[in-house]
Amino acid sequence: MSHLFVALIIFACVFGSALLGLFIRKQLPAHHLSDESLGVVKLATGLIATMAALVLGLLISSAKVTFETTNTQLILNAAKVIQLDQVLARFGPETQEIRTVLKHNYAAVIDVIATHDRSKLSQLESPQAISRSDALRRQIENLQPGNDLQHALKVKAEQIADEVLGARWLTLLQANGSIPDIFLIFLVTWLSIIFGSFGLFAPYNGTVIVALFTCALSTSAAMFLIQEMNRPLDGIIGVSVEPMRDTLSRLGQ
Image: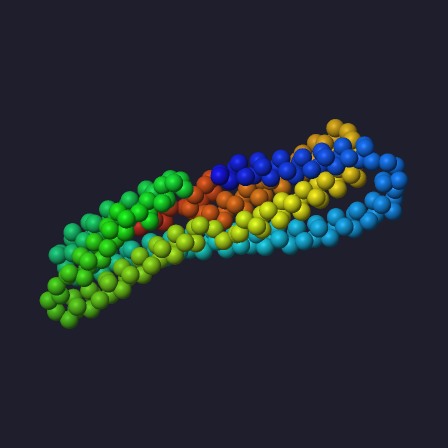
C-alpha cells in the first residue's frame, strides 16, 4: 500500500469525523450542548490531544532518525568502497579485474537505489546480488601476495570488503522502517476523535468546513511525510544517491 494512499485514508477518517461531529451537533438535544457538557467534552478532548501530540512527536523523531541513519550509512559505505578500490590499486595491476567488477557491482546498486522503487529494491537481497558479492569476496581472498606489503594490503582489503557488505545489510534492514503500524492506528483514532469534537463545538457553515478541511489535509500531509521519511530508500522522499555517484566516478582511477 503506497504512502499516498494511506495518507488519503487518514484524511478521509479525520475529515469524515469532523463532518460527523457537525451532523451530530444538529441532532443532539439542547441540554447536551450546554456549557457544562461542552466543558467536559473539551477536557476529555484535551487529554486525547495531549497523548496524540506526544505520539506524533515520537513518530516524527523516529522517522527522522531512520532517514538520517540510512543516509549516513550510505555515505560511509561509499567512502569504504573508495578505500577498498585504493587498497586494491596499491596491491598491484593483478587486481584490475577485481576493481572492474567492484565498479560494475556498485553501479548496479546505485541504479537500483536511484529508482526509489520498493519492488526493485528487493533485487539488492536477491540470490544473484548475494552471489555477485560472494564472488567478489572470493576474488580478493584468492589474491596471492608476493611480499609483506601485499599481504598486509590483502588483509586490509578483506576487512574493508566485509565492512562494505555488512553496511549494505544494515542499510537494507533500517530502510524497512522503525514505526510499528499500531502507533499509526492509535494516532489516527485519536485524531479522528479530536476532529469529531471540533465538529461538535463548531456551527455548521462554509467557513468552518473549509477550516476543518484544511486542518485535516495538513494532518494527513504530516502523516505522509512521516511514512516517507520512515522508509528512506523508496517513495517520493528518498535519500540522495549523489554521494554514491561521486564515488562511482572515482573508482578505477
